[in-house]
Amino acid sequence: MKSVAKSRFLLFAAVLAAVSGCALDPIHARRAAATASAAQDQTLDCPPERTDACAPDSPYRALAAAALKQSTPAVPVHYVNLIERGEDSLLLRLHLIRSAQRSIEIQTFIFSEDDAGYLVLDELVKAARRGVKVRVIADQLFSLDDASLYAALARAHENFEFRVYNPTFHKASTPPLEFAAGVLCCFWRFNQRMHDKMLLVDGTIGIVGGRNYENRYYDWDGEFDYRDRDLVAAGPVGTAMRASFDTFWNSPHTVSLSRLRDVAGDILDAGISALPYATHTYRNAERVAELLRRADDAEYMRAHFASEVLRVGRVDYFADAPGKPEPSSTRREATRPLAALLRAAKSEIVLQTPYLVLSSTARRLFRDLHKRPQPPRVIVSTNSLAATDAFYVYALSYKYKKRYLKLGFEIHEFKPFAAEAAELIADYANLGAAPAQAPNAVRERAQNRYRHAPLKSPGVRVGLHAKSMVIDGEIAVIGSHNFDPRSEIYNTESGFIVRDAELASRLRASILLDAAPENAWTIAKRQRTPLFGGISNAIANFSEALPIFDLWPFRYASSFEFDPAGKHGECKPMRPGAADFYACYTDVGDFPEVNLPLKTIYTRIVTAFGAGLVSIM
Image 1 (cartoon, helix red, strand yellow):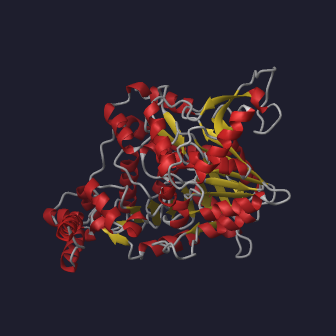
Image 2 (image 1 turned 135 degrees about the horizontal axis):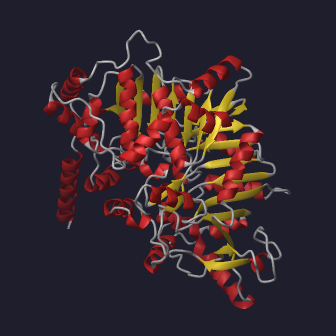
Image 3 (image 1 turned 180 degrees about the vertical axis):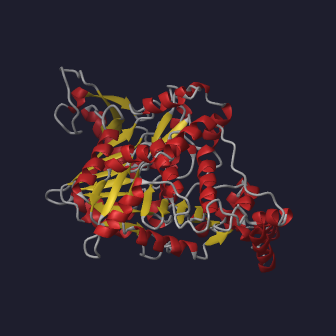
């Protein structure tokens, strides 16, 4: 038996070695870097004597200049915008990239090969050709996996450099077998990802939030789009953003393209006479052209964006360090300021997160808040099973709903066809393809990559992806942190903290709109008969406490739909626990709008057996 076990181990080791390979040796890495450098475009589309890199006018340059002029070290000044609509966010990014005069820095978790991803790549290369220094860091695991595209980017221009964070087995692409091997052989390193999302232009205008570079973050998918949020800030906070970016840029976790084995091979095969980087052909060229037309229109950008800015004071940029500390460490650069804000809350916490799975640290924190004589009200906007793109994570939040309600959480789960989704449907239809007629490739890609549940109704599904918080109506937090164990323990995260009542009011109103009855179901205690209810509750308590075998099907909480007519006449939205709640809200079950019973079975299985996975989901 020992020989069999040893043989199996050696076989596995051999397969793993074959899959993983070795790091690119220094000689080939230097050759690939030199070849890419020799093949790089060095021409400029703007005369070198032009110090503005031929950038078009932008109202944000004036705002940034004004903020820097008005700021002092003790009293900084910033001009900020909340960016709620997806396409607006892409439009503003393109405008700022085109208006850059000196530098552009980008960090992102996802860079996809679709219209949004290709468009931003093309615009960044064009900016480099004008004379702007462009640096991009993308997490390797979920970004471009085409080695030939990476090779083209490596030689695109001397002013353009793209690096990847934490590449698996020193390659750009991670096929399924290598993905599995990464989990088995190097779990901590493989599981630690760069989840930051930031764009910094000329060191003075920055955007942070939840959006990556993929169609679904900008209302362009036609199948599944995200409800997300960004904050743009012009002013001195750019200094902190650049310092954080430089830390990542110079980290050993961040790797140049020429050091990736598959990319280096493509570079060396193509040689110094390789074709120059070519802009892409877009699937929806008409939509792209219209967006670029508006991006070049300074008056349009002034009227629709810059005129809506708020003048605020201090803006703090929080960010983890690359490599995120080992689990035994207590250093959590992004988590510590958020925890401090929560502990200091007095009257209200309004929280929006796609995944309501709290770490043990967060549970203790909220438990302490709830024990106060006058605990702060906690309003939570999160996804329903029908809206989420990660039903495994939802299954774990489903397991602990009673726990969260007992902590005083008022939970509102986002509907997949919220009232605001009508705009997405109309936008897609106006482009000549109704959602039901979306190309099969788009639909199949969404179904294969995003594990969401099939629904009863057709249309553009919308899922929450925004990560935001408002404390006491005075402090606004917007960033990439999901307020979950993965963000606390594994992923690097970043964001803005702004102490301004007006911005906090706007953000609070936006989150509460997502939690409104037309956009969300309310989670509340299920009505039960006195005898069975008590017995069921006791069994459910015992079952929930088990790390596995939580199999009791009758849960403490359910989803409720608001009924304006009610059982006794006109109703208004109210909190769970109000005297007339059950007269004005109808129990619609555990998983409203979900069509396939099998998905609910999966969900219950993960609920029963997946508690140990909380920290990595």
